[in-house]
Length: 180
Image 1 (tube, helix red, strand yellow):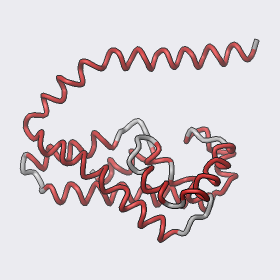
Image 2: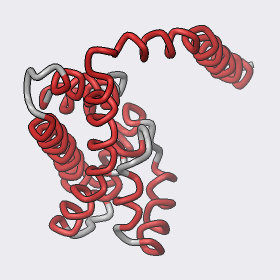
Image 3: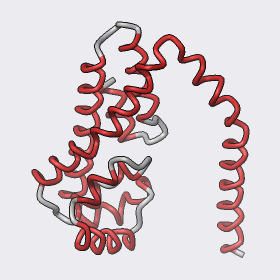
Image 4: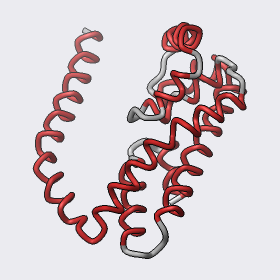
C-alpha cells in the first residue's frame, strides 16, 4: 500500500482513492487492521508530498521550466501560487490535500516558493488525514461487499470515457488549428 501511494504521486494515473479503499476492504476482511491501513496510507501520502516538496525546493523555477509539462504546470502557475500562498499561507496546503490531483501536485510549488519545511509537513499531515481516513473507511465499510461499488461505477464508465475522448479530441483540434 505504501508503494502504491508512492506510485500515485509519481504516476498520477494510479488514484489514491482506489489504493486507500482497497486497503480498507482488506482491513474489513481482517487481513490487517483499520488503524494499520490508515497509518500506512497516511505515511505514504506524506512521504510522497515530502519528495515532491524537495523536488520543487531544490529544483526551483528551473524545474518547472524544464519538467513542468510532466506535472501539468507552467511558469505562470507559479506566479499564481506565490500570490495564493502570500494570501492564504499554508491553509492552501491543508485544503489542497483534499482535492484530487491538486493534493499531489501542490507540494511542488510549495517547495519552489520555499515555504518552511516543518510547517509544510504539519499542514500536509493534517490535511492528508481526512482524505486518507475517508477512503480507508469507505473500503472498510464495504468489506466483502465491494461488488456493490463495482456495479455502481460500471454505469459511469461510458460517459466518463466519452468525456475524456472529447477532451482529447478538443486538445488535438486546438493544436492542429494553431499550426495552420
